[in-house]
Image: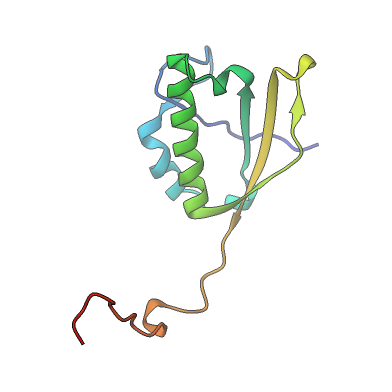
Length: 122
């Protein structure tokens, strides 16, 4: 069994998670920049069926925030999802994931021949 050393929660609503200290969502990118060993990070995303409702403003806001956070993760890392676990009646899904550092590309933009502009006169 592994031990959790630190928990970081990000949300735009301070106090939304009760006793858990919540960091403002605006700090998420800076937090990702500080990760020195991304492979040791274990991510959790608790998804509820109502999170997908488009007629519920709080769900729309939550989904927009989660989509943005996942885009930030995917920009920096490969995100590997493990098998989800579900609450009774499958109302909640606990998604677990790990971060994997992407290898440096073996090419650079200067290695690619300049593309010809089809709109440029010949």
